[in-house]
Image 1 (spheres, one colour):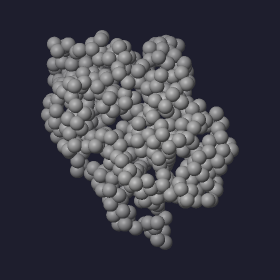
Image 2 (image 1 turned 90 degrees about the vertical axis):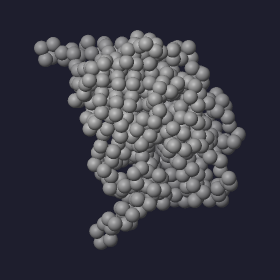
Image 3 (image 1 turned 30 degrees about the vertical axis):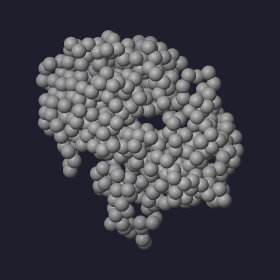
Length: 520
């Protein structure tokens, strides 16, 4: 359950007579074989948080790329401050006062925080960059965002995912934008950082800045939003809904065209085979990231890892998978010890990982869906060095249909899929591989309510088939709702483990917070 909005972040009543900053009418955008937008309408007023809802593939990402200048529409009219306009490029949109914070961060790893914030808009005199001025302004922005501890001279690649999100926010704020687009801005943030973000949003809207806010978390929509526009299949199906009073069932029905179960599906019968230990982790330790982590997972069991951002949950999964090498400890699958730090050894033993950062860690974005789905199973599709492309396509299509990936076209380039469908493509890889241990790191991050229900059912289906599942999620109700057993981590160490049925959200929060106010 979400906490009630604090006074500092609760949305005030927007001025019904406020200036209409943006009007998009009948926007159309077509890609080869796909009509992504089919007549979308959107109106945004000064000083409001306008929430954009829709299932993955509904057209949200394409719409904001049109608005940010990354895509050019094929039809329709855009009016900015009551003047017809086009955004020929992201810089053109930014110069008009429209800044975008993308869900998948577009930061440059090899440069500093300050350099990322001012990238493409550096302060310079006679061609020489004013580095001190940019560092000072970057430092002031990080203080405003409530994180003065992030130094402007640090390389951005060294920051956590949450720290990188804050840099992206600072980059949007530095341009003094009139409209800021926020695409899933809280996905990598701990709840105290969410409070910080909402405080900043509230300050901005009181100054007349408008925010287009995209999130799959309906509790956030109610907490921060004023009005809601809903997209489905590239069209606007509802506009101007009250964000706080429109019921969840109505929003879900509008997004999906059908009533979708919004709670975690019940497991009719326990599938845990306690006589069949599939995964054993003993004394796993890696530097300052985590120490002496031990646990087991049986066939048909779902084990959840709960903890704050930075507790070491993702690092443990990556070490089990061989993407990181442990300093001490061991990993065993079906009674055989895995070679430390070897992804091929883990995959050969039947271990699969769906990573948190799907674009940078899990996908070949410019390859087809089929190429991504069969990536871990290539030897099975080869004979005498020749690939059986037909079987690859057939197996990929069957798996995509099972996951309800839309469209279920294995030839489509992964980069063109929505975020939720990209996540499904990662999971599909391990379904084709028929893995024995599936490690899921934030599997529903950026996934809409309908797709979440499908993924929940799929996870239970995999457990029923005997797969051992280890789940990391920043949402405590999700961990408790899906798992048979829960391991609670804090600062790189396991605090406790217990059956999920014996834990409550409050109990987990008490264990992990240690003086903090919120769960990651």
